[in-house]
Amino acid sequence: MSLSLRNPNIFSMESIWSAQVKKPTPSVEQMFSLLKTNLYTFEYSNLNSNTFEELEHSLNLAKRNVRNFGTLYFGSHGQKGSLGVSFSTQEVITMEELSELMGDRFKSWAVHFASCSTLNTDPETIKAFMNKTGIPMLTGYTKDVDWLESTSLELLFFYYLQSYYEDLANFREVWYNGYKELSEQNGFKWILKGDL
Image (cartoon, rainbow, N blue to C red):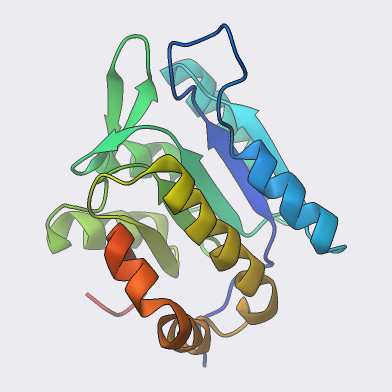
């Protein structure tokens, strides 16, 4: 039996990227809006999560909407094995802590860490995260990435996910046949259930 997601829709939680408030700041909302314009069946939700309490609240909302989405997207700054929760306080949450918040309600979902270096961690940490949450697919970055370059990669990635979400192993093969160099340039890492 092939690994699959419930559907290709995205539930996103994004923290602010910069202290600059005098001009519009980058947001993954722009990427999702472009996907929505070109993919009529694609749906997404993008919530602000700039504190631990907001992140917890957003995850609880996702748990109540498990049938409507298929990917948890965490857009924030990051570091080895953790995500930035708040740009202003530099508060972080480890993958272990995040798996506790998530529980096992997302067993047919993917998780994407749109954050620098989060997946630059040991295989045991990644395996424990996937086992605790039960997710079939985890993606993210093993190094610091440029915001625009990584967003361009993600635009392509989530566009193709619309066609391949029912067969993740095939999707990974198709992706690396076309975008191996782009993936390596950005330190993009892709783990499927059973890889570790």
